[in-house]
Length: 422
Image (cartoon, rainbow, N blue to C red):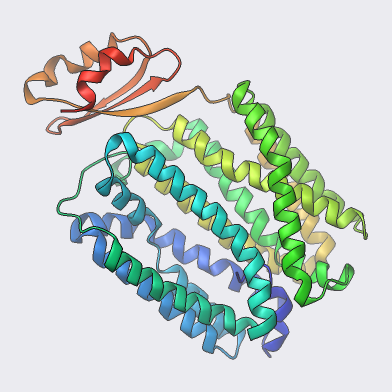
């Protein structure tokens, strides 16, 4: 909710500068990135409940500090504290604790959809709340939402009796180095970094462009964002569906990056009453497509049993991109102006486009979690490897679960079915 309006309200603080504006936007991402994996690992040791409640309390504290701030530095401290409530990975792990394996994919998809919906609602509600209550009103509302989140968690979320050591949702620091250097995963991590860098840096100037160059009043910002996000979603949906249906994900992916770079180039050189909203629409359409495609591609590309660790690295890359984007956007705006900022983002996206050309369209793979009896360990890999459609296997000595990557189109599920439930 802060993202679409902060640039318009920074003048309320005496120490406001473009650099502090960008840093205030981005510092939330820095503390999120630093604590995402550590808090997930901590929850493995002391339980999900204290980490989740503690994270939400930290978020509430940060919101109160930001709402009470009378300077950009105080606002920045509040945003940093908000980011220290980095519980996303812990929540995902708890979903694994509370759901049966056959329902887990649906549960994760539902969470992903709710995150996307919350982003759209935030872009609409942020300007509405700020117009009636000021910037501090947004932070008071987020503090209230944090308290509601704690109440919902304590009252409605079942108590976990024992953690399930499912490597598809838990991070394992022993495998971070190998996953960081895997070529496909590296390109995807760079991608989510660049995507959120571009988003955060753009919002250092987008609110001001809408207000000053297009004469959109603060009261009307909400419907402009609704039109841009809604139009962008409608525009990207058929492209994404056709790409999935005809196995042309790479084509739609690299095309979206190229169009995003072109939009930034035009915004840096030829803004106008017609061109600016059109290019912003292209920007949001491409952002929606890439934001939806990247985690799906990452999930398909992860080695068997390493999804939790790979997604932890992915989330860290995303939040680091937000931090670098906000900071870089503030510095660029201060040194080179609005045009220079957009041209810099054009260069960043062009580099990402070049790196993405080395990607191969993801195969239709999914990971199954199989149950292995103690007496079956010795022959399990040999038996499963012989089944049609099995691509990769991870079997950990001493554990009763095995992680098998299969081709959804060709796998012989009948042969695997005895291992799915015990």
